[in-house]
Length: 125
Image (cartoon, rainbow, N blue to C red; front, side):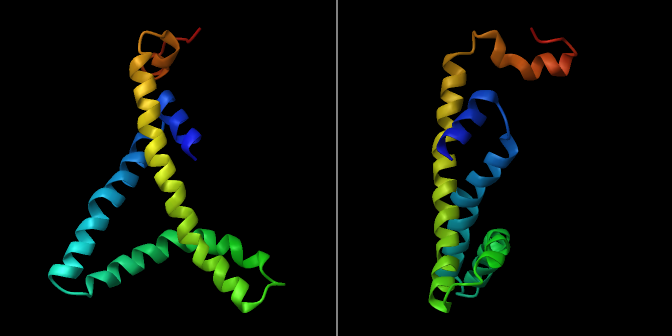
């Protein structure tokens, strides 16, 4: 995931998607945790709902594959979903700025300005 996100940064792709990821982990998560500690633990319920929504799609993909597994194996697989998601997100959050740094260091290269050429209607090449 690091390399995919690094490529996104190099190519100037998916800005909003990466911004949402940073806002979620660096703003929304700390705010919800602070509200739960300082005001009322019910704020953790919102965090739980968000976490379940975040893991719902991978869970849907997993379910058809677990026919031959025990209940313990199924539970273990479900518990690994958030671990895998967070690990991937952290890798992306490290990779994207690395790609942006590369892009900034190589800004004299004409091929990295593809977005402005598309916006102006110019042909690339």
